[in-house]
View 1 (cartoon, rainbow over the protein chains, first blue to last red):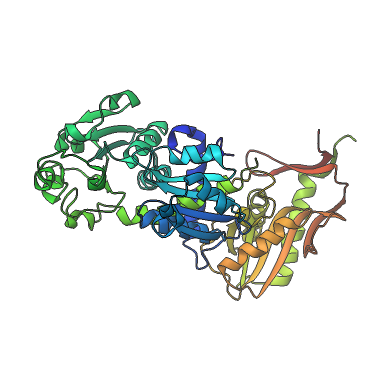
View 2: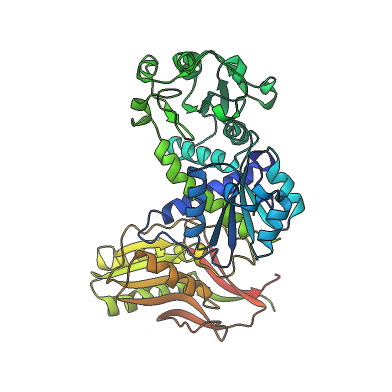
Length: 306
Length: 178
């Protein structure tokens, strides 16, 4: 049984919780590869997907996961709702819960929004990304994808490359990988690496080539233009030359590494098109695994006796 | 009540042989039959049956193991951890024999019938159990092949004790607390 009532961030999880979610996801991956991809486990549960920020993958992935567990699903997007008339977050959610909803999957641009909500409403909350804070299901699916490829997470060397400062994926990934016994390097221009990030147990490397020489897995992150209020580097072209992964860089390593990307990809910036579509990358497997991992998280939380 | 032995090793071996012969009687060549052991505890028995049948007939019938966790109706009551399903075949038009260790309320079998639908439409489904706890069913499900029938009350529990090498040591009836 999970030690937590909500999935707000990887930081709150125990290693055993992560093990349980990954183990359950193995079973769901099997389920979604059968001709009939549905199981009836959550047929009495209603889930609202509350998205205050744009999303393609996460939202579709959650919705598919919910439907494959036979839950009833309602979708909510902030732009077409009364939020624009000035309704508060708690009021919005309580109104939705009054219609007998059991779980809330929420993405919000403010860090801590999911945590705040969990203290004020009586439903189980899954954080689908809160600002630059955490994105727990992405970290779980990344860990799941690495484990399926490498067989284990213990001792695996992972380089997280790119915009670490604005990335919730990076933070959740670091917590998750460290808890599971992997080693992590973060790599990017000094302006995009948070100060004192070493204190959570990662090394910092500013040279992409050195980071890649060291690692087994490279997780390439997108430059989050929408969160950047000032210029952190001279130009996209210059960033791409220093920190973009392409065939020449990969060939110069003389070794095999696994390439991951949480999407959306900015082709030609952090990764070249050629590599993103090559068999070195498991980007589309990550998306497939995402459904299984989210099914596992939803299943375990919904079925957790209170 | 002190624990009572229902089956010891020798008796189990004889019962296992009888069940296998009954299966052979009804399925002769097993060309259209698949055996499905139920996870987690039914598979220890189903592996014994599969092995015994292979020895008796010289070739092994098609065999799979099915986990029914996601189809159960008691998952909100107690935390359930799923086991592995390994069914690398479809059961469209096949005669399926579900194998489980103890038939008690019948709810596991109901879940298994639901789970089986994901692998096709079987021609027929039969049920083989080692221990049939009569008079305790919650749903109208009865076995087609029974090792031993036991009359036990709800405060009692049937326990199968397996050895390290996956052979059965004994089946005992005991109080739930003990």
